[in-house]
Length: 255
Length: 328
Image (spheres, each protein chain N blue to C red):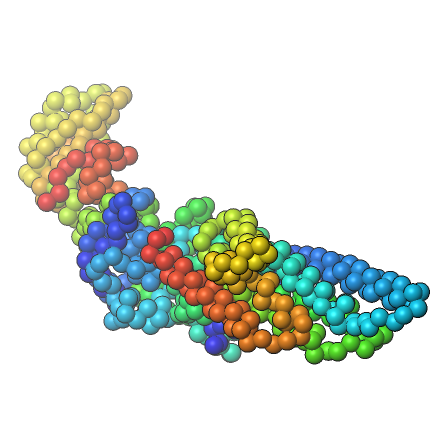
């Protein structure tokens, strides 16, 4: 456990001493700010229109502002995740520092967990910048906080799964660009898989749709904790980290 | 301390290390010698648990590298060919990080960081980013991280590669000073380095063990017969080289005299003798004949020549004259 912490703190520091962390936090804050402003603008516009027509439609800030916002975050997460994970192992392989880690008295699992948790922590920091916007929402409105919390939990699980996949891909190459591009491709594919369910209902289509990470986020954005979706993400995390461990082991046999 | 038995590493197409066996005693400093691509790094990587051997076994302090890698890793300090440095970290933080990885903590960690900084002369760059260090400093920080947990065994892969002559000397002195308390294996393809720093040599070529012996024995073994260069000048005129040759050949123990070159009345001969103590007789013979003895110098075989002989390379050693002599 101590070794996980050592690796974790070193990795997290590496993010924050380089421009990567600040670039991502800023980019995310700006993009999310725009989404928030947009969603709120639309909400206000709809409210005014309803007033002008003279009949009050039931309006729900959770349903009409928070839910689409969280869905948007889940999508832009796909773009940020490759940037977080691409360096994790690829950089160590290129610079040779991997030799330090693999000849130190630490287990591969500890290295992998430390790195993955650091990536997740950076993602959490990124998500935290969005809390500022929601703080305004809570100051001037009265949304329900429980669906929001559930939505954040869903984002965290989804990011954990995709970060695990990204970590795995990063062990496959010495080249960060390749690791980043491949991770982005896989993430995107895992997202669009859901589209087949639009026109096809055969078993294979159902399987493909089931594998789509976005599909499983829906329940969270509604504020529902569906064990089947949570288990999907958790098993994806496990699978990604398991592959990472196998890949790290094979590194030794092949290199 | 280190036992290697029939260690073999095979890749898909080639065998990098082929049934190598050797032993290193505690406190020894051993030179691991071989041309580039001989399998030095691969062997070292197997001893440090970075690579698993295809077959054979290696043990460090009694622990097998495959069975108990964590125990082995605790006892090994390893400096790979390129020092494993994170460019975005400061020297002090980096050494503390490595120390923690190796299991140090608290006051002991701080003490060790200060100690290795002092030992490897990197205290003045403690607050500098590793990415901004010069090659010499990088190498020294690499050495510092290898000894931070005071390991029993130190494995150094070409520790002086890419350094300038002054830095090379400093690094060698540092390594020598570490011997005694640590068992050291250092790989190199620079021969004088082994002559200067190591007690024991392991020579490998193309993945195979060629020789393992002490530096001294190896030199003696290769020498077999002693060879001397003798430069002779005539008093106030040239000497008859034929006459000199005959006289020298008559000295007891001399087996062969070859005229090397002759310039301005200075004649240089190469004299081969069976036993090692004919220098006095040679000098006397020259002086008694009324010539000047300008130089009389044994040409000990350098490791370079031994190495070329043992590895069967066709390239000639710089001094040339001895290459090709058989080694029994």
